[in-house]
Amino acid sequence: MGSTREVDEPKMQVIVLGCGGGPREDNTTAFLVRSTATKWARGSLLAVDAGTHLAAITRILEKHLPAKNPHDADELPHTLTEGPFKGLKIPNFSASANAGYIIRTIVDAYLITHPHLDHISGFVINTSSLPGLAQNASLDCQHIFNNVIWPNLSDENNGAGLVTYMRLVEGGSPAMGDGEGKGYMEICEGLSVKTWSVSHGHCIEKHSHRGSNAGLPEGSPRLGPTSFSQMERSTRSSSGRILSPADVLRTDPFDRVCVYDSSAYFIRDIASGREVLIFGDVEPDSISLSPRNKQVWSEAAPKIVAGQLGAIFIECSYDDSRSEDTLFGHLAPRYLIEELKSLVAQVHAYNGRAKEKKKRKRVSERNELRQRSTRTSLSKDSPVSPLTRTSRRSFEFEVPQADGIEEQSDGAAAASQELTMRGQGELLLKGVKVVVIHTKEKLDDGPAIGDLILQELLDWESEEQLGCEFYRAEVLGMRCTFRESLWSPWVVVLSMGLA
Ligand SMILES: Nc1ncnc2c1ncn2[C@@H]1O[C@@H]2COP(=O)(O)O[C@H]2[C@H]1O
Image (cartoon, rainbow, N blue to C red; front, side):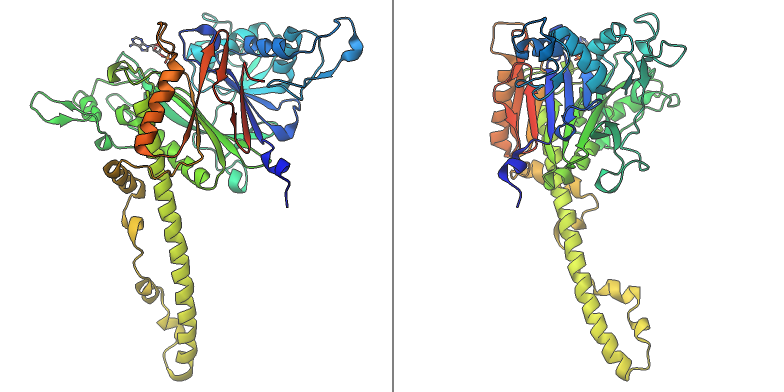
């Protein structure tokens, strides 16, 4: 039997370097993720977004470096005994030199959810001051490394070759990985990743220069997998007919809307199979012109049922006082809850399918037994071949109709409908940790935005009974910290200020 210590040992660590969505530039979105099994090996840190990066790492180290005699080289290398980098062997005295060591040696790749400045500025600025840094970035930086906004430090278009782009296959490549890790791409020592595109609002101009509409022919706005008829929100045409957002688009084939692409990453600890899900900026499916979150929830559902998903990091930029027309591709608590209800629906549907599969298996085993005994008796006294009698058709006829959810053509949609009717999540997300990120400060004297959003989420939760636990980060001076530290059996999340 495994010891309790073994069970409680975190398998993954997420260090929150920045958790805000602006306007403050010192707390913009940035994480470091690692598999604890790698024990701080070379190339074992994955940066997910890097709105802030080197500066935040330096600040953490300043707080946790030992008091030392700067001339006593015998003290080096030193193993850190506290803070988010606890256990890391550092080769230098100063916080600055050690931060440089971390990003040159331990950080192996940068997963960028989308190339907006609050998610990339640290990465871009750090690259210029670190000659020799060659990193994989899942970012098409051509708009940044274009010799106008920033020198082309990439290895494309005659660039300096400090950054290598890596383009991930949406939904994972079937050629990658084995077994449960199939489709996942190894991204750094100990971690693999699967990515899904999600939508982050749309450009004010009507064109398709980038984002999910790019490359589509004139007048063909790309619609996501969810049909617009499922949307709750709608507008009224001059004739009084209710128009969905898709209809609005279709009324003028030359009006095309450019949807900003963002990403959701399932990051997997290769050693244990545990995962965390980290979203970039994202808007709710219900008001999106290219709703794609449902696909992510569908992928998450079985992992939740299997207890494999440690935490979901998702944005909630505004509180519920924000109107729909000023969300600019973000979530507020009412929409985050709506999305989590969509996840509940997927869990419901998954459970239904699993139940049906089990039932079918049982029935098929029973039938098999029955047929065997029939075959035995037929073979004794019937001229008809037992094989003829056990044809596929007669077999199918004998399978009784399974009840409930499996009769629906789309289990998730049915479950969703049911949820809307009942308004209850049946605590199906019990134990799921939802970490709220990318909150935007209001710059007023009112309560901290994190407090406001968390309270609203808790109010929604008591109404909807989804079962998830909410955590949020807040800005305290130069630091962000969690009001409660998040420690699940396999994920430890440490933010800047936390020991
Ligand atoms: N049409 C708009 N009018 C005013 N502000 C906007 C508009 N679109 C986007 N923004 C702001 O620009 C910000 C860019 O980063 P974010 O997506 O985090 O949040 C966005 C909004 O705060």
